[in-house]
Image 1 (tube, rainbow, N blue to C red):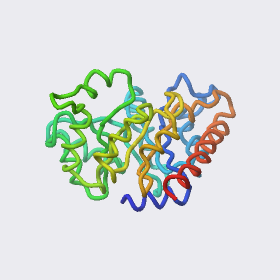
Image 2 (cartoon, helix red, strand yellow; image 1 turned 135 degrees about the vertical axis):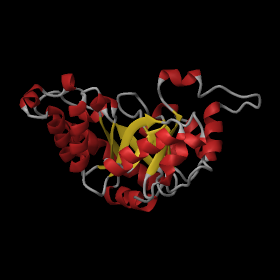
Image 3 (tube, one colour; image 1 turned 90 degrees about the vertical axis):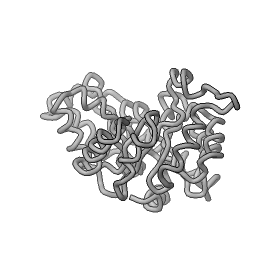
Length: 272
């Protein structure tokens, strides 16, 4: 999938919403526990409820790996259920020496057919480059994350006052192109997103942290949107757990619709 195709879907739906499919068995509605595959039944209902607003879906692999072999089957069924026009992200946060990264890439791009995978860049170029060899696939590098512990390393400054995340952006932007590389930047970072944009003005950003984590959608758009939108804003818990009852899918739809309405206004304001 090209950036142009992603932008076309954004324009079509007037949305840059990515839905995080991060189900926990203990949190899904009780009536689904009678299903043969409760997690897949939950995911299927969420997808059906949000497909008109979402341009991307991002399963976090930990939620499936924790279920053992059956979790991998559920993940594949979920991926197969998603329509071809949406962008699919394996939130796997992989990254290892070259031959290992090659096998990770084959697993997620060839066997499972994800469009993209999140990768930790801190082992350097040779740990990332194997993922970039797959035509039409994307690497999403961790840059400036929204978790509390990100301050431990990402904001450390060198002798010239450059924070580590900025050095990662500067170094890694030459590894790939705007057609195969994106970056994770947390929504809670607010004005810092502007600093990111000064280094990588044309790349897409995957932005988690809107919703349950308290990030501001308006700030993300103000500081991060470019002429082709350039944003995929992820919401997980705020959508999929909008209700714990039988109306969970309807509640998820309302949350997705609310975000889409806000995103449409922001697209017209900053990208129109």
